[in-house]
Amino acid sequence: MPRILSSITWLYNQVMDECGHSVYNRVMAGEKNAHRTPVTLTEEQAKRMLDGMNEVIRAGEEMRRLRAEMVKLFADFGWTQDRIAQLTEMSQPAVSKQVTKYRTGEPLPPTTLSLDQYDVPWLEGRLRGLAEEISENHDSARCTRYLHALARGRKHYTPQNVDELRRLVEEDLTAHQAEMPSSYRSAYDEISRGLDIPAKVTTSASASVRRALACQLQRDRLKEDSPSDVDSVVADHAGRGQRGEGHGR
Image 1 (tube, rainbow, N blue to C red):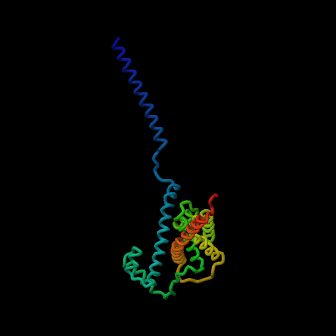
Image 2 (cartoon, rainbow, N blue to C red):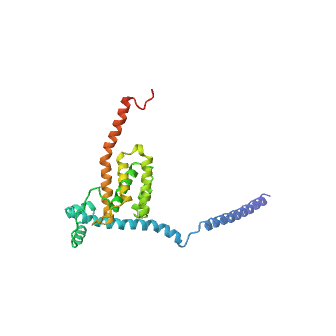
Image 3 (spheres, one colour):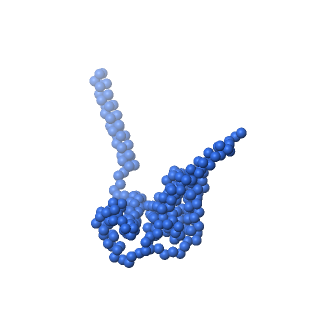
């Protein structure tokens, strides 16, 4: 009897073992089919991957061209090649090559750095500078994503895109009016009037250089004006507090 029970137990274990392996193998085969390793990428996958790479490459190429033009501008300012190399993080021979290249042409009139210029690229640069200040100081700024698209080359400075940036900046100015210095609105109004009726001016520098210069100068001007605006707001609130305005009686 014990030998019969032992035989039955052995057969049972064999059957269960075979069934278990069979079920396990079918499950694993199903999982392999569900996550089959592809032989190659699809065109859609390749496009999604390369779109991001190409975007960065395009933006890099545009920035390199802009930097090369800025080298010429700095040389026109009378800066030494060593100083330009340090600022641009270029080698001195590379700077020398760029300077020599530009000096072979006809000398151009000096660049004016006054904000009060009304050609379209200059005004576009001022608008971008204002938008960058808003974006940097307000996390919820609506213009931020559009600025990134312009910076990465996904958007270009077409009249339609500039109008869209104007619209977003105006929305931010309205939404954050209480928190922003009055100089932001003043700058926006002046830029908008200029873009509505642009001056027909011919300039020596390229549009990208004009935008870059105006953007930086506008940002610097806003930073200079902001402290005085903030002080006036604080003083106004303090004066109201002393007079008892805005408090319940």
